[in-house]
Length: 303
Length: 324
Image (cartoon, rainbow over all chains, first blue to last red; front, side, top):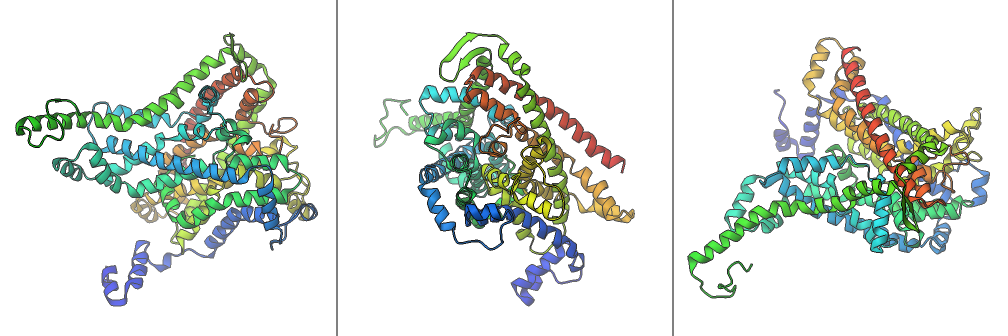
């Protein structure tokens, strides 16, 4: 207790020392650091998380004959990756089209979910209206409905609209999600003070204006996370795009499946394709991995 | 806008009191309508792509309905009887439950253990947390393709490792149970880290006083884990299990790409219910009626197993607090 506070340490020994001190205080001192066994376990786990991806790259940089000869690939990549990627791109899986489609679908879905979910979250958390409680319960309850069960009627609906093979068939059903509404409601509940809204209203702001200039900026951290998770969910989705888009106008996961189905004899080609298809999200992970971790830990739970 | 037509918007100086009432009225309408307007996109979309399909699935399921020909005669519950009479339906049900149990149980146990490891005062905590989450950004289809090669029966990585240490090779594709283990491994690869972080967050919310009291009572670290940590995680465990049930029983992506045909193996060793549904509707039969019937059966199936899981987890989680 008589030890210098972090603030004091900052004054005496600079910011780094203060941060270290604060960290030590949090868990009761350096003595509590776990032993090497912990790091060995964690190291093995990380290797297991990363190896399959590296394996994919190793085989993707190899060739069919070598893969058949050495089932356990050498840890050093071989030189055929660029060639194999070239073959993937020139094959008939429409790689560029699939990449473009995935970008369009994921960006539009994420933007739309963020906008509509924040709008609804603003209303549910800060506006008073009749039926608010039951309606919110209803929203949460819809999350328990297994989505894949509706594929038959949804497909019939899309054919009636003439949308099969059209990106709209994938984008429109995902424009706003129950999870997003719930997530933004929870966040705005605590992050947006009533006083701010009342002040804006007294100043004569319309509801939409209040939303736009008060709620939306306050929602930014949670909205960014929601956007990230929606983007990943949309980018990795397979079942519905596979059914409704098919091979004529695929997204990346659909074209990966096509690649596997049509070139099953040559895994160097297939796994080169898998590796480059995984690249965009790996870059996203490198940039925003911290936010993803924070998001999962704050309850961004969505399969 | 046109509540009062006698006052054009551009009029320089309309009588002050009247103008205020119009504006006030507009503001009142705004304040009343806005809350509903802002939540309406969700409800409209849900009605269109959630509720309507659910009900319509039932309508389709009681008809002869073809992917190309469209609606045929009303057949009552024939499609259900047909589905329940098919051996493939039951094979699919067996495989789905087996894969789900294999992945769900190992994943939950592994995630709790890993969360306990991460919940120590470790160095570079963000690095380790990011490391366990890495597989989450890889699409299930990609995971499936990579692992189907690693688990290849001949000249696969896993079998080569097994034989190199003197163990027999496993028929990952030919054997029913082994194929389920392989697919459960893919699911666990992608999700264990994610679930770990959920448990880690829950562990950090456990008040330290509980551990202090346990230490005063002389509880070992093992004892603390089973008597404090696990019981306190109960709501989270239930949540994770229910979510995993809803998602896991609909599994499609990984088994679909476990071989290049995508039918679940020569003897349907790893064909899941959703794969069966897909095959009925979009395979050679093109029978939407039967696919819809299977959808509803799968729905009931998920509810039943979800309830069973809920009861089981409640018991397991609470008995570990009392007994051990």
